Figure (tube, rainbow, N blue to C red):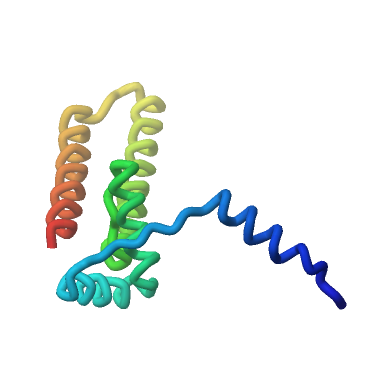
Length: 125
C-alpha cells in the first residue's frame, strides 16, 4: 500500500503548528535526581519534567506514584466514613432523634486534618 508522499510532509507541518519543543539545561546532579525519580514513576525524564512543570503552571501539586496510591486508599476510607454518616443520618431521621452531631463533625474534621497533614509531610520528602 503506497502512502501519499505529501502525507508525511503535511503531518510534520501540522505538528509544528500544534507543538513546540522546549530545551532545558540542568546541572548533572539535578538530572541524576530527576533520573532516580523518573525510575520510581516509570516515566522518561522528559515526561516527568513536563508533568512537574504543568502541575506547577496549573498550581497543582505533582503527586508521586507511591503517595498517590496511599491517597486512593485514604479516599476509599473517607468515602466509607461518609457512607456511615449517611446511615446515621437516615437512622436519626427514622427515630426522630439526632445523634451527637457536633461530636461527629469534629471527628470528620480530625480525619480531614490528619489526611492533609500526612499528605503535606509526604510531599516535603
